[in-house]
Length: 371
Ligand SMILES: *[C@@H]1O[C@H](CO)[C@@H](O)[C@H](O)[C@H]1NC(C)=O
Ligand SMILES: *[C@@H]1O[C@H](CO)[C@@H](O)[C@H](O)[C@H]1NC(C)=O
Ligand SMILES: *[C@@H]1O[C@H](CO)[C@@H](O)[C@H](O)[C@H]1NC(C)=O
Image (cartoon, rainbow, N blue to C red):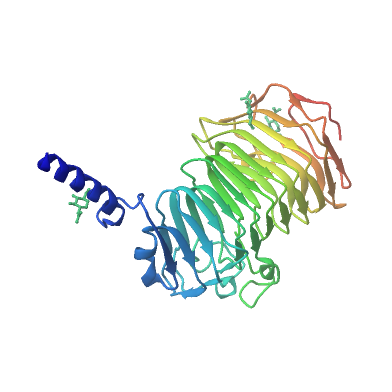
Protein backbone atom coordinates (compact mmCIF):
# COMPACT_ATOMS: atom_id res chain seq x y z
CA UNK A 1 0.00 0.00 0.00
CA UNK A 2 2.76 2.39 0.99
CA UNK A 3 4.68 1.62 -2.21
CA UNK A 4 1.60 2.33 -4.34
CA UNK A 5 0.96 5.58 -2.45
CA UNK A 6 4.53 6.74 -3.08
CA UNK A 7 4.23 5.98 -6.79
CA UNK A 8 0.99 7.98 -6.99
CA UNK A 9 2.63 10.82 -5.09
CA UNK A 10 5.70 10.71 -7.34
CA UNK A 11 3.52 10.74 -10.45
CA UNK A 12 1.44 13.68 -9.28
CA UNK A 13 4.55 15.60 -8.26
CA UNK A 14 6.12 15.07 -11.66
CA UNK A 15 2.88 16.17 -13.33
CA UNK A 16 2.96 19.35 -11.25
CA UNK A 17 6.65 19.92 -11.87
CA UNK A 18 6.66 19.19 -15.58
CA UNK A 19 5.60 22.65 -16.80
CA UNK A 20 8.73 24.08 -15.21
CA UNK A 21 11.08 21.42 -16.56
CA UNK A 22 13.27 23.39 -18.94
CA UNK A 23 14.28 20.34 -20.98
CA UNK A 24 10.67 19.68 -21.95
CA UNK A 25 9.34 21.02 -25.26
CA UNK A 26 8.55 24.72 -25.08
CA UNK A 27 4.99 24.08 -26.23
CA UNK A 28 4.01 23.19 -22.66
CA UNK A 29 3.89 26.40 -20.67
CA UNK A 30 3.68 27.22 -17.01
CA UNK A 31 0.90 29.32 -15.57
CA UNK A 32 3.00 32.32 -14.73
CA UNK A 33 3.51 35.79 -16.24
CA UNK A 34 6.77 36.36 -18.11
CA UNK A 35 7.80 39.94 -18.78
CA UNK A 36 10.13 40.93 -21.60
CA UNK A 37 12.03 44.20 -21.24
CA UNK A 38 15.16 43.13 -23.12
CA UNK A 39 16.34 40.19 -25.21
CA UNK A 40 17.87 38.71 -22.04
CA UNK A 41 14.35 38.16 -20.66
CA UNK A 42 13.03 36.16 -23.60
CA UNK A 43 14.11 32.61 -22.74
CA UNK A 44 12.53 32.65 -19.29
CA UNK A 45 9.44 34.66 -20.22
CA UNK A 46 8.23 32.41 -23.04
CA UNK A 47 8.02 29.48 -20.61
CA UNK A 48 4.99 31.21 -19.13
CA UNK A 49 1.57 31.16 -20.79
CA UNK A 50 1.05 34.84 -20.05
CA UNK A 51 3.68 37.07 -21.64
CA UNK A 52 3.98 40.85 -21.43
CA UNK A 53 6.22 42.74 -23.86
CA UNK A 54 7.36 46.07 -22.43
CA UNK A 55 8.72 48.91 -24.53
CA UNK A 56 12.46 48.45 -25.28
CA UNK A 57 15.15 48.67 -27.96
CA UNK A 58 16.29 45.51 -29.76
CA UNK A 59 20.02 45.71 -30.58
CA UNK A 60 20.95 46.00 -34.28
CA UNK A 61 21.37 42.67 -36.04
CA UNK A 62 19.24 40.71 -33.56
CA UNK A 63 15.82 39.10 -34.00
CA UNK A 64 13.20 39.41 -31.28
CA UNK A 65 12.33 35.71 -31.65
CA UNK A 66 9.50 34.44 -29.45
CA UNK A 67 8.54 30.76 -29.41
CA UNK A 68 5.41 30.77 -27.29
CA UNK A 69 3.99 27.87 -25.32
CA UNK A 70 0.71 26.51 -26.67
CA UNK A 71 -2.28 28.63 -25.69
CA UNK A 72 -0.25 31.64 -24.54
CA UNK A 73 -1.76 35.10 -24.12
CA UNK A 74 0.65 37.85 -25.14
CA UNK A 75 0.14 41.56 -24.66
CA UNK A 76 2.28 44.57 -25.48
CA UNK A 77 2.77 47.23 -22.87
CA UNK A 78 5.07 49.57 -24.82
CA UNK A 79 6.74 50.26 -28.19
CA UNK A 80 9.62 48.18 -29.55
CA UNK A 81 12.30 49.83 -31.71
CA UNK A 82 14.88 47.88 -33.72
CA UNK A 83 18.50 49.00 -34.08
CA UNK A 84 19.76 49.54 -37.63
CA UNK A 85 22.22 47.35 -39.54
CA UNK A 86 22.42 45.97 -43.09
CA UNK A 87 21.46 42.32 -42.60
CA UNK A 88 18.73 39.90 -43.70
CA UNK A 89 16.49 39.95 -40.61
CA UNK A 90 13.78 39.20 -39.69
CA UNK A 91 13.47 41.77 -36.91
CA UNK A 92 10.54 40.06 -35.20
CA UNK A 93 9.46 36.44 -35.32
CA UNK A 94 6.77 34.60 -33.39
CA UNK A 95 5.70 30.97 -33.43
CA UNK A 96 3.31 28.81 -31.46
CA UNK A 97 -0.15 27.26 -31.49
CA UNK A 98 -3.39 28.87 -30.33
CA UNK A 99 -1.73 32.17 -29.37
CA UNK A 100 -3.68 35.27 -28.42
CA UNK A 101 -1.42 38.23 -29.34
CA UNK A 102 -2.69 41.75 -28.57
CA UNK A 103 -0.45 44.71 -29.35
CA UNK A 104 -2.74 47.16 -27.56
CA UNK A 105 -1.97 49.64 -30.34
CA UNK A 106 1.77 49.60 -29.65
CA UNK A 107 4.40 49.94 -32.36
CA UNK A 108 7.24 47.93 -33.84
CA UNK A 109 9.52 50.57 -35.36
CA UNK A 110 11.81 49.27 -38.13
CA UNK A 111 13.55 52.63 -38.65
CA UNK A 112 13.14 52.26 -42.42
CA UNK A 113 14.66 55.63 -43.24
CA UNK A 114 18.10 54.17 -42.40
CA UNK A 115 17.72 51.61 -45.25
CA UNK A 116 15.50 53.23 -47.85
CA UNK A 117 17.24 53.90 -51.15
CA UNK A 118 14.41 53.51 -53.66
CA UNK A 119 15.67 50.05 -54.58
CA UNK A 120 14.77 46.47 -53.71
CA UNK A 121 16.84 44.32 -51.35
CA UNK A 122 18.70 42.92 -54.36
CA UNK A 123 19.43 46.23 -56.02
CA UNK A 124 20.46 48.35 -53.10
CA UNK A 125 21.82 47.78 -49.60
CA UNK A 126 20.78 44.66 -47.70
CA UNK A 127 17.59 45.21 -45.77
CA UNK A 128 16.01 43.05 -43.06
CA UNK A 129 13.10 41.40 -44.92
CA UNK A 130 10.58 40.39 -44.00
CA UNK A 131 10.51 42.60 -40.95
CA UNK A 132 7.80 40.52 -39.20
CA UNK A 133 7.56 36.72 -39.50
CA UNK A 134 4.28 35.39 -38.12
CA UNK A 135 4.15 31.63 -37.56
CA UNK A 136 1.35 31.34 -34.99
CA UNK A 137 -2.22 30.13 -35.04
CA UNK A 138 -4.89 31.94 -33.02
CA UNK A 139 -5.27 35.70 -33.13
CA UNK A 140 -2.90 38.61 -33.75
CA UNK A 141 -4.45 42.03 -33.29
CA UNK A 142 -3.97 45.75 -32.71
CA UNK A 143 -0.29 45.97 -33.69
CA UNK A 144 1.31 48.89 -35.53
CA UNK A 145 4.38 48.58 -37.74
CA UNK A 146 6.17 51.83 -38.49
CA UNK A 147 8.74 52.35 -41.26
CA UNK A 148 9.67 48.83 -42.33
CA UNK A 149 13.07 48.51 -44.07
CA UNK A 150 11.38 46.51 -46.90
CA UNK A 151 8.69 43.73 -46.88
CA UNK A 152 6.61 43.81 -43.70
CA UNK A 153 4.66 40.64 -42.82
CA UNK A 154 5.44 37.13 -43.97
CA UNK A 155 2.66 34.87 -42.69
CA UNK A 156 2.91 31.07 -42.46
CA UNK A 157 0.41 30.04 -39.81
CA UNK A 158 0.40 26.37 -38.70
CA UNK A 159 -3.42 26.42 -38.26
CA UNK A 160 -6.25 28.98 -38.42
CA UNK A 161 -5.09 32.55 -37.77
CA UNK A 162 -7.06 35.81 -37.70
CA UNK A 163 -4.98 38.99 -38.04
CA UNK A 164 -7.01 42.13 -37.32
CA UNK A 165 -6.85 45.84 -36.61
CA UNK A 166 -3.25 46.15 -37.76
CA UNK A 167 -1.57 49.29 -39.02
CA UNK A 168 1.36 49.44 -41.39
CA UNK A 169 2.58 52.99 -41.75
CA UNK A 170 5.36 53.34 -44.31
CA UNK A 171 3.97 56.66 -45.50
CA UNK A 172 7.29 58.38 -44.80
CA UNK A 173 8.73 56.20 -47.62
CA UNK A 174 6.58 57.94 -50.24
CA UNK A 175 8.98 60.89 -50.41
CA UNK A 176 12.31 60.63 -52.23
CA UNK A 177 15.51 60.84 -50.19
CA UNK A 178 19.16 61.58 -51.00
CA UNK A 179 19.76 57.94 -52.06
CA UNK A 180 16.60 57.28 -54.11
CA UNK A 181 17.28 59.35 -57.22
CA UNK A 182 13.95 61.14 -57.12
CA UNK A 183 11.91 57.91 -56.57
CA UNK A 184 9.91 57.08 -53.48
CA UNK A 185 12.54 56.13 -50.92
CA UNK A 186 10.55 53.13 -49.65
CA UNK A 187 10.54 50.17 -52.05
CA UNK A 188 9.35 46.55 -51.93
CA UNK A 189 7.47 47.34 -48.75
CA UNK A 190 4.81 44.62 -49.33
CA UNK A 191 2.22 44.67 -46.57
CA UNK A 192 1.45 40.94 -46.30
CA UNK A 193 3.17 38.12 -48.20
CA UNK A 194 1.18 34.94 -47.71
CA UNK A 195 1.93 31.37 -48.74
CA UNK A 196 -0.48 29.68 -46.40
CA UNK A 197 -3.94 28.32 -45.64
CA UNK A 198 -6.74 29.25 -43.25
CA UNK A 199 -5.81 32.89 -42.81
CA UNK A 200 -8.02 35.95 -42.35
CA UNK A 201 -6.64 39.51 -42.47
CA UNK A 202 -9.23 42.15 -41.61
CA UNK A 203 -9.91 45.72 -40.50
CA UNK A 204 -6.32 46.83 -41.11
CA UNK A 205 -4.72 49.87 -42.75
CA UNK A 206 -1.65 49.57 -44.96
CA UNK A 207 0.19 52.58 -46.40
CA UNK A 208 3.20 51.39 -48.40
CA UNK A 209 5.01 51.34 -51.77
CA UNK A 210 4.34 47.78 -53.00
CA UNK A 211 1.60 45.13 -52.82
CA UNK A 212 -0.88 45.63 -50.01
CA UNK A 213 -1.41 41.86 -50.04
CA UNK A 214 0.43 39.29 -52.14
CA UNK A 215 -0.80 35.69 -52.11
CA UNK A 216 1.87 33.46 -53.62
CA UNK A 217 0.16 30.15 -52.90
CA UNK A 218 -2.40 28.72 -50.52
CA UNK A 219 -6.09 28.29 -49.87
CA UNK A 220 -8.93 29.52 -47.69
CA UNK A 221 -7.59 33.06 -47.35
CA UNK A 222 -9.92 35.98 -46.57
CA UNK A 223 -8.82 39.61 -46.93
CA UNK A 224 -11.65 41.89 -45.81
CA UNK A 225 -12.47 45.47 -44.79
CA UNK A 226 -8.87 46.62 -45.09
CA UNK A 227 -7.65 49.97 -46.39
CA UNK A 228 -4.72 50.00 -48.83
CA UNK A 229 -3.05 53.34 -49.52
CA UNK A 230 -0.35 54.30 -52.01
CA UNK A 231 0.99 50.91 -53.11
CA UNK A 232 0.44 48.30 -55.81
CA UNK A 233 -2.99 47.06 -54.76
CA UNK A 234 -4.27 43.63 -53.76
CA UNK A 235 -2.39 40.90 -55.63
CA UNK A 236 -2.53 37.22 -56.20
CA UNK A 237 0.95 36.30 -57.39
CA UNK A 238 3.33 36.42 -58.79
CA UNK A 239 2.60 32.73 -59.25
CA UNK A 240 5.59 30.42 -59.76
CA UNK A 241 5.84 26.79 -60.91
CA UNK A 242 3.90 24.22 -58.83
CA UNK A 243 2.05 26.87 -56.80
CA UNK A 244 -1.68 26.44 -56.30
CA UNK A 245 -4.04 29.15 -55.10
CA UNK A 246 -7.71 28.43 -54.33
CA UNK A 247 -10.59 29.61 -52.18
CA UNK A 248 -9.68 33.28 -51.88
CA UNK A 249 -12.15 35.97 -50.75
CA UNK A 250 -11.26 39.65 -51.23
CA UNK A 251 -14.13 41.73 -49.89
CA UNK A 252 -15.07 45.15 -48.58
CA UNK A 253 -11.60 46.64 -48.99
CA UNK A 254 -10.88 50.30 -49.77
CA UNK A 255 -7.99 50.87 -52.17
CA UNK A 256 -6.75 54.43 -52.52
CA UNK A 257 -4.11 55.84 -54.90
CA UNK A 258 -2.57 52.48 -55.87
CA UNK A 259 -1.00 51.40 -59.19
CA UNK A 260 -3.78 48.86 -59.64
CA UNK A 261 -6.75 47.94 -57.51
CA UNK A 262 -7.01 44.17 -58.05
CA UNK A 263 -4.44 42.01 -59.81
CA UNK A 264 -3.58 38.42 -60.61
CA UNK A 265 -0.11 37.98 -62.07
CA UNK A 266 1.49 34.69 -63.08
CA UNK A 267 5.02 34.10 -64.30
CA UNK A 268 5.33 33.54 -68.04
CA UNK A 269 7.72 30.62 -67.48
CA UNK A 270 5.78 28.93 -64.62
CA UNK A 271 4.56 25.35 -65.07
CA UNK A 272 2.14 23.03 -63.20
CA UNK A 273 0.46 25.84 -61.28
CA UNK A 274 -3.12 27.02 -60.85
CA UNK A 275 -5.29 29.85 -59.53
CA UNK A 276 -8.95 29.01 -58.94
CA UNK A 277 -12.03 30.09 -56.98
CA UNK A 278 -11.25 33.74 -56.27
CA UNK A 279 -14.18 35.96 -55.22
CA UNK A 280 -14.10 39.75 -55.20
CA UNK A 281 -17.03 41.59 -53.62
CA UNK A 282 -17.74 45.04 -52.24
CA UNK A 283 -14.29 46.47 -52.88
CA UNK A 284 -13.96 50.21 -53.57
CA UNK A 285 -11.03 51.89 -55.27
CA UNK A 286 -10.18 55.47 -56.23
CA UNK A 287 -7.17 57.20 -57.76
CA UNK A 288 -5.90 54.07 -59.52
CA UNK A 289 -2.85 54.93 -61.63
CA UNK A 290 -2.37 52.04 -64.10
CA UNK A 291 -5.06 49.32 -64.16
CA UNK A 292 -8.39 48.95 -62.41
CA UNK A 293 -8.28 45.16 -62.73
CA UNK A 294 -5.42 43.28 -64.38
CA UNK A 295 -5.02 39.55 -64.89
CA UNK A 296 -1.72 39.00 -66.63
CA UNK A 297 0.17 35.80 -67.37
CA UNK A 298 3.33 37.43 -68.70
CA UNK A 299 5.20 38.36 -65.49
CA UNK A 300 7.86 39.79 -65.23
CA UNK A 301 6.59 41.67 -68.29
CA UNK A 302 3.33 43.58 -68.11
CA UNK A 303 0.94 42.59 -70.91
CA UNK A 304 3.78 40.84 -72.76
CA UNK A 305 3.70 37.32 -74.16
CA UNK A 306 1.73 35.20 -71.67
CA UNK A 307 2.75 31.72 -70.54
CA UNK A 308 0.37 28.77 -70.46
CA UNK A 309 1.64 26.85 -67.41
CA UNK A 310 -0.65 28.45 -64.82
CA UNK A 311 -4.29 27.42 -65.20
CA UNK A 312 -6.71 30.15 -64.12
CA UNK A 313 -10.40 29.43 -63.49
CA UNK A 314 -13.42 30.58 -61.48
CA UNK A 315 -12.47 34.25 -60.95
CA UNK A 316 -15.67 36.09 -60.00
CA UNK A 317 -16.89 39.57 -59.08
CA UNK A 318 -20.17 38.82 -57.34
CA UNK A 319 -22.22 39.91 -54.33
CA UNK A 320 -21.80 43.54 -53.30
CA UNK A 321 -20.69 45.79 -56.17
CA UNK A 322 -16.97 46.39 -56.68
CA UNK A 323 -16.64 50.08 -57.61
CA UNK A 324 -13.30 51.05 -59.09
CA UNK A 325 -12.49 54.59 -60.25
CA UNK A 326 -9.26 55.04 -62.20
CA UNK A 327 -7.17 58.00 -63.32
CA UNK A 328 -7.60 59.35 -66.85
CA UNK A 329 -4.47 57.72 -68.30
CA UNK A 330 -5.07 54.33 -66.65
CA UNK A 331 -6.76 51.25 -68.18
CA UNK A 332 -9.99 49.90 -66.77
CA UNK A 333 -9.58 46.13 -67.21
CA UNK A 334 -6.81 44.13 -68.89
CA UNK A 335 -6.86 40.34 -69.17
CA UNK A 336 -3.89 38.70 -70.88
CA UNK A 337 -4.29 34.92 -70.80
CA UNK A 338 -2.01 32.37 -72.40
CA UNK A 339 -3.65 30.24 -75.05
CA UNK A 340 -5.99 27.77 -73.26
CA UNK A 341 -4.69 28.73 -69.80
CA UNK A 342 -7.86 30.54 -68.66
CA UNK A 343 -10.99 28.43 -68.64
CA UNK A 344 -14.64 28.15 -67.65
CA UNK A 345 -17.07 31.02 -67.28
CA UNK A 346 -16.37 33.87 -64.88
CA UNK A 347 -19.21 35.98 -63.48
CA UNK A 348 -18.19 39.63 -63.37
CA UNK A 349 -21.69 41.03 -62.76
CA UNK A 350 -20.62 42.98 -59.64
CA UNK A 351 -17.77 44.95 -61.26
CA UNK A 352 -17.99 48.60 -62.28
CA UNK A 353 -14.86 50.41 -63.44
CA UNK A 354 -15.06 54.08 -64.33
CA UNK A 355 -12.65 56.66 -65.80
CA UNK A 356 -9.57 56.12 -67.95
CA UNK A 357 -9.75 53.97 -71.05
CA UNK A 358 -10.69 50.37 -71.77
CA UNK A 359 -7.96 47.76 -71.69
CA UNK A 360 -7.75 44.55 -73.74
CA UNK A 361 -9.50 41.39 -72.57
CA UNK A 362 -8.44 38.32 -74.52
CA UNK A 363 -10.34 35.63 -72.60
CA UNK A 364 -13.87 34.98 -73.88
CA UNK A 365 -15.28 33.28 -70.75
CA UNK A 366 -16.04 36.51 -68.84
CA UNK A 367 -19.79 37.04 -68.49
CA UNK A 368 -22.01 39.94 -67.41
CA UNK A 369 -19.34 42.57 -67.96
CA UNK A 370 -18.31 44.97 -70.68
CA UNK A 371 -16.01 47.97 -70.52
C1 LIG B 1 12.65 16.87 -17.48
O1 LIG B 1 11.94 16.21 -18.52
C2 LIG B 1 12.71 15.27 -19.22
C3 LIG B 1 11.88 14.80 -20.43
O2 LIG B 1 10.55 14.51 -20.06
C4 LIG B 1 13.14 14.14 -18.26
O3 LIG B 1 13.91 13.19 -18.95
C5 LIG B 1 13.97 14.75 -17.12
O4 LIG B 1 14.27 13.76 -16.18
C6 LIG B 1 13.17 15.87 -16.43
N1 LIG B 1 14.05 16.54 -15.49
C7 LIG B 1 13.66 16.89 -14.27
C8 LIG B 1 14.67 17.60 -13.42
O5 LIG B 1 12.52 16.67 -13.84
C1 LIG C 1 -14.48 28.31 -53.14
O1 LIG C 1 -13.89 28.91 -51.98
C2 LIG C 1 -14.81 29.07 -50.91
C3 LIG C 1 -14.04 29.78 -49.81
O2 LIG C 1 -13.57 31.00 -50.27
C4 LIG C 1 -15.34 27.74 -50.47
O3 LIG C 1 -16.28 27.93 -49.45
C5 LIG C 1 -15.98 27.05 -51.63
O4 LIG C 1 -16.37 25.76 -51.25
C6 LIG C 1 -15.02 26.95 -52.80
N1 LIG C 1 -15.70 26.41 -53.97
C7 LIG C 1 -15.21 25.39 -54.66
C8 LIG C 1 -16.00 24.99 -55.84
O5 LIG C 1 -14.18 24.82 -54.36
C1 LIG D 1 -3.73 36.96 -75.62
O1 LIG D 1 -2.81 37.88 -76.24
C2 LIG D 1 -1.48 37.47 -76.21
C3 LIG D 1 -0.63 38.60 -76.74
O2 LIG D 1 -1.09 39.03 -77.98
C4 LIG D 1 -1.33 36.18 -76.98
O3 LIG D 1 0.01 35.76 -76.94
C5 LIG D 1 -2.22 35.13 -76.33
O4 LIG D 1 -2.18 33.90 -77.05
C6 LIG D 1 -3.66 35.62 -76.32
N1 LIG D 1 -4.46 34.66 -75.60
C7 LIG D 1 -5.63 34.23 -76.03
C8 LIG D 1 -6.37 33.30 -75.12
O5 LIG D 1 -6.10 34.55 -77.11
